[in-house]
Length: 216
Image 1: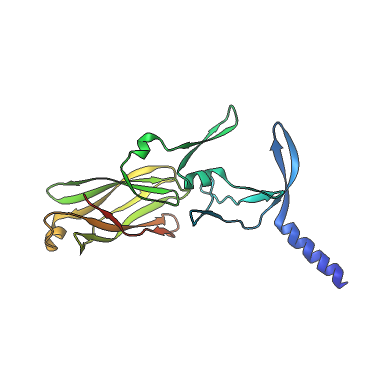
Image 2 (image 1 turned 135 degrees about the horizontal axis):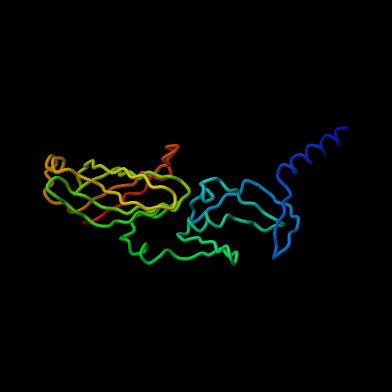
């Protein structure tokens, strides 16, 4: 009796890990066993969460010892564009367009998010550092400036920019003249800051970057 119970439990465990699906090959279809085992994807030591175009989680799986990964999630993490040709049924991977590659000095690139420093500007009221944020992740993100210092003085500016998945937006870090005067800053020689990046929907932190230094 104990052996029967043991066999039943083992069968339930295996059944929970392996399911049957139809896999299309060429122009036909065959039945295959899909194994799900909570696989993780690491790129350059960083774990990524694979999602589809709608931001829904897509779990990697294995078929007969071969692991299958969601191409869009991996391509985005590697900084590649993903395309689909319906006519030829072809997945197309390509490098980012030259326009995007020359969008400025890249100061942060991780988890499908790229931030480039564009330029520095000032007017009668403020000084501004202008960035381009490109969101190739599956999340709606918000990017904020943290741990800022100008010429070695800790100074707080204003920057909070939301970016939808697959979109890009300009983000401006603004320091008002009154704040600069309070810290006896007449000319900005250097900016040090970190980026706080979080999911706009859940407020979960995606990353807090290392300190980045910019000389305007």
